[in-house]
Length: 134
Image 1 (tube, rainbow, N blue to C red):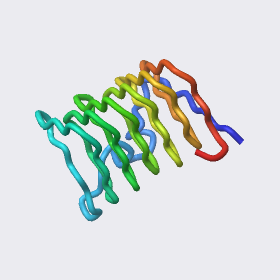
Image 2 (tube, helix red, strand yellow; image 1 turned 180 degrees about the horizontal axis):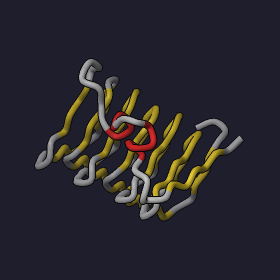
Image 3 (cartoon, rainbow, N blue to C red; image 1 turned 180 degrees about the vertical axis):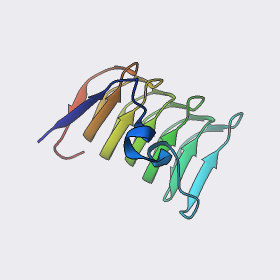
Image 4 (cartoon, rainbow, N blue to C red; image 1 turned 135 degrees about the vertical axis):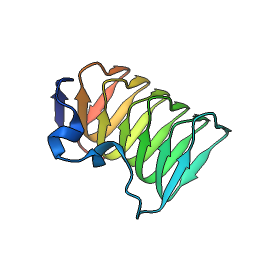
């Protein structure tokens, strides 16, 4: 069964859940951080969580949780177990679990996910397949 949730921008996701864990990575987990001002040209894969505030030009694969900050950008296909997007993606997005598009998210490409949560203000242009196998 497909599930799409639309969230009004007035109620922040962190406030609703009582913590900011939706858009951040916990310190105790293995994390990969790509800082602002960093550019990675070519494919990028991580078996750990990723926080992206820089730019990746090429395919990005994350076996766990991917968080793309407002300044973060991917120019290529994105594959992850779950994702919170605040920045931009120019390419297809395949998420096996939940995909959260925050109000500043911009996606130019097709989306495939098990669950899609879209905050008011988010923009995506492309086909969208929710539910089923991702």
